Length: 93
Length: 314
Length: 97
Length: 103
Image (cartoon, rainbow over all chains, first blue to last red; front, side, top):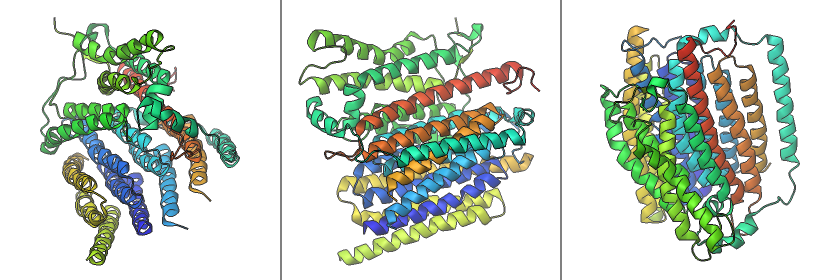
């Protein structure tokens, strides 16, 4: 059973890691942050699977912290862009 | 290959890709986002290396680092084109790449040559753990066996904060960091800033409290507390305190002071600096941890806020 | 009963993993930022939800189960808000750039 | 290959990537990112050492873990200080270059 859960974790990790391509390609900065956001959620899922697979309840706390801070990159990005210029800076390259 | 090893290989591959993106991406902003992805992968790696305490710290700190670096990347965006012209020539880059490869080869050789069986303090730690009354050896290391390190780190934290504050204009000295708060017009940000902090504060306190016996700790706990304040500030719900405020100063030094007090008391009731009398280790450690959490949270939050820019009100 | 639960759990986890796959494919293949946010939000909400659902039968005790559900609820809240934030940032970027 | 060796070799490569970014990037913010990658790679080597030292019922040697936790916080402090210096430089000169002549 644990093997199956770990395999699922590896699958989810590989999947969201491919999303890094969007980080490199953009074209807008919002797209790049999206890749990090997906990685955050995927990472939380991986931690949950690992926690149950290895019967380590403390790992759930890491998942909890990750879930709490998952939105920080998006929030920091939105607030930095919002406060920079009321018209909204063009972020296409 | 077992599924666990496949997962580990995936994490290492993700670490390398994210680090590559952080270093080689086109813009500084993209590089910073790559670094955030890297921090996330690092938290997973720590879990797989059976270092849950470290994973908690990494996950919490990466939130603050993200706010700091993303904000700087957005503010410095206009300056990027001019700096890009300073890129070293192709030959220099090649030379740097060769040297870095040599460093990697050296480190890899060291890793492959690690002694077997590995030298370890784990047996010592396991033997001495009962004397501290704690169940989590990492907390015991941080607050008992290597407590001097932790104390010095508190001092470094305060010194770093002072250095940041010293960048202020003379007229802003003692004033508040950052522009005055403006309630965000973004409903989603306002919602986050209202809903997350209560949960984050409870989780942070829980991490401090549980650290005696389970993975957790004053560092991830206080980092989480600081992060929640930073979030509320991003939404314009709270203002940064004036750096000259005596209450703020008291909160900042409470932790180190308690630490020093217990440390010097060690001369009187035990056999030296930061020595705990038998049977008293756990209550003393908790007595240090609570003010320390407040001080660390305040210092981390203000490090993110930056130097004061608004003159103090008279 | 327990075999049935195990089977359902495995199916839910597999389905959740597929939602993450779909989220990544959407993030890479969809033509504009707003539809990409849409794909991302699905992976966030449904993918993680299904995985939590599939893990619940394996939870050793009530506290573990409660934490699993708490993580899911948090990601619901934070992920949805983050998607909203990114969508409005993307729209502003599109309007001016 | 054991998982520890895998992470150790990965950390060696990470150190090279971070160091390269630190040396080659012209933008100070990107240098800072490179330096942080380099530093964390060293932490991971510590983590590998700790994991290999699992003994006496402990899953890993706790002493390196405590040192890494201290290191992560100190790395954050120095990053925050560097960002503050950089923003101050930008505010004072309008540029983010570290060169005197600003070529």
